[in-house]
Image 1 (spheres, rainbow, N blue to C red):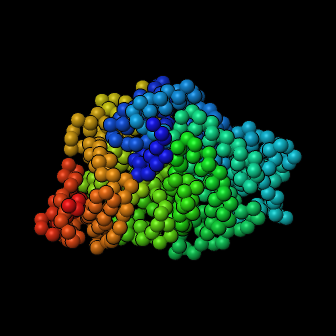
Image 2 (image 1 turned 135 degrees about the vertical axis):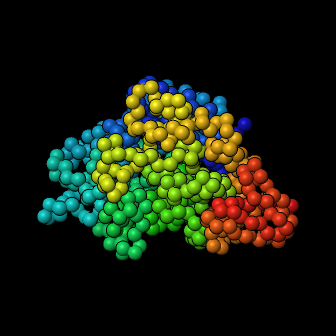
Image 3 (image 1 turned 60 degrees about the vertical axis):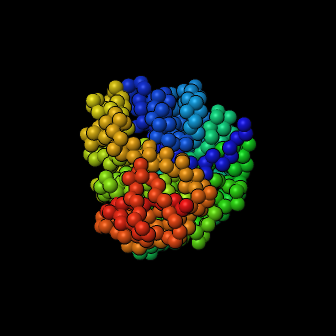
Length: 536
């Protein structure tokens, strides 16, 4: 049987944050063996693939997003043999395996950087973005780090600044230097040969910086979109024209895709840009010769996804990228969990789950989302995230969404670890553990299982068209079209609403999800209600 090169289209991808999924050793930190042990849970959910956040060798200043060896497993997570066993078990369960590649930067402990910073004439002298200071000794331009302060760090050995878009311990690679690209593509080949089915590409639009290091212009206050740390980070005061989103990235992505093709592998790129995310997605996924999917931030914002915002998002996307393929998500390891972020009651959370399953694109679910976990309330003394420590108390960081997965209720650590967890397990999460929900057919967990099964049962929801999306008050309606036609109506508000069906004959579906049936040509949707109808 040949490789299904389109397996990713419409797939549901379950994100695993390995530190917090399952600990198999008792050291309080999740690991690869723990993931393997719990793969049955993900398979029972009905997901198509897993995405594992970084597990590579790292000093863990940014919890694995600072890589010091791309081709090995950090001992805290296990070994390459453990990874091979994980892949084998995933294959048995019919799950594809995607891993998180952080290509834009490394750790300052990576051998490449240690050599590069030694002097200006070593073989890797040009592997990172180095620049001369201005005449007064200040940084070469006004670029800012996402984690606060200047994006430039002085290095006394070379008497130059190096670029770091994130922590000072995360120097940016110089993608203008061809050997850097080749070394990173070799990393991709290494993991493909180990059976990986694809990659999530961290900060895909940060690979290249402007070769002339021009200053970013200011961004007017009314245009700022502070999606992660509202109001506290001056990074959002600039229009990031030159420190990311460079046109040279397109050709590198073509090279990257050429490496994937023989393996039938797929990639989803994280587009970190508040102003041009959809436009960049259009550039990176068009033509069938770059990445297959991009991971925009439109549904990861602090503002709740209303019917009007949904209409606006798809209208923008259709205007700039009608053929682009998004990978939608409500929650991930960098954002406040959407149950808390949008202040959703249980009925609303269920409605948003079904909405996600009905959207055109692929989908990402973040571990614990299927349990309806809220954001954990983390005290300052419990923080581990450098971002949260830097901007406390206005921004509490990302630890609240990274606390351990809860598997059982009759254990103070939720069955995650027999030791002391690296982040605390909070009581509201224990009450929603897998064991508390597994056999309860009314639980959020089983609602997710039914929602994923519904999407899988209707191919049109995975690969069909989406048309006619419009908002009337709190109600969003649209049609999915393909081998069958499905009309979807969602009341994303707390008041009753009335919706007329399109012309034609329609039969109710999705009853197992609690979808409302129509009477005649109209349906009455209660608060957070939804209607799913198939054209007959």
